[in-house]
Image 1 (cartoon, rainbow, N blue to C red):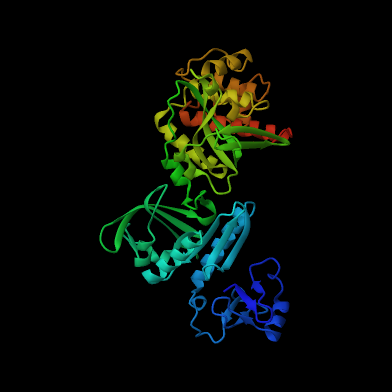
Image 2: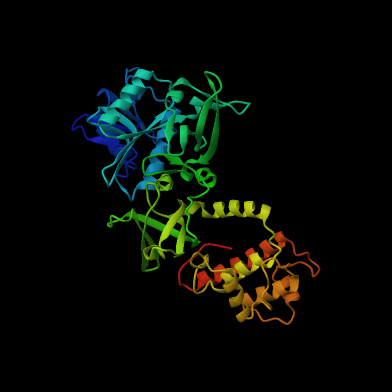
Length: 472
């Protein structure tokens, strides 16, 4: 265990706190003079902290055979709750008043593996369960949390959810009892392997027999998952599987609001205030988020990307210019989602046509004045006209026109503001092509424009006007 009480003044000593983590000698003196007691059973414990420790510093009962809930923990359980404590500490420190490990809850008498109290007063108790405890014990603990109005989140060990050779899962009895219906589907469960730091999120668990189950399952690093506003875990696969909220606007366009935070709206008409910070400037807008999308909002409510549908025309004039969320997801997943969407798009799109090239070239050509998320709703004809008027393309190509090598390379050099009498030689020199008779395939066009896009982004970031991610 990581916490104990001083036998003299009942002061709680947490070995995970910043104050005590480097004070081995001081704690040794306290233990020798006053002694320590377990905060659960109030019996004697000793500090196990060697000068050159082979295990992490901890308290243990003395003698070891004391009958106490805190005495039955395995090494794996201790490591698992430590990982969860560090995860919540790293992720939620800005929005909480208290994050604690082995936290004693006075109103229930329980010790939660990890306890979180948010600034809005909401409380979570995170329990890491590796042992097959009795159903009566589990129900009693959950009832106590409910009476105290504390959200209890149960995460089982990988030992209670074992994947079999035929891809079915063997769930131990206590895991089966912890199946929960969530916003993401029925019969869901989360499991943590403390040795690998990996979590498994199981959805739509269905029984084959009394011990074997089939399930839709996804695996992530612990740091790569999120908990939503009501304490449900989710990962990038949940966002991928969601097709997006559907509206019935006739004249609208879709754009991306990147790296935003959400605040509670002070206007009754709207659910949230969206805040986007760019250097010293804050851009704000009110939006309503459909109930269906609420499950994708992380508890932190920050560092989010929101795909919105913006209304261009409507019979209700107040709707014009309003933004309506289609998808919400953590900004850290954007590149992976874009890659997955691009791979799907490549399967049905021909990138060797001018439609794709003109869109990308336009984004590059306008990068110094506007980032792409502001330009995503620009009609193709306007992008094409701009590139033609700027002399970047030599004619008004139709989207389905096949790309030829020389006009494409000329356009690339114009975007890069490179003057050359021999664009072929210049392109070879820059690593854009390897030989003149290269075939203009969709893959070639994508790779070329990605290289050029990276150069444009690097140049923009060097201007000191802000910083953007690779977007092409």
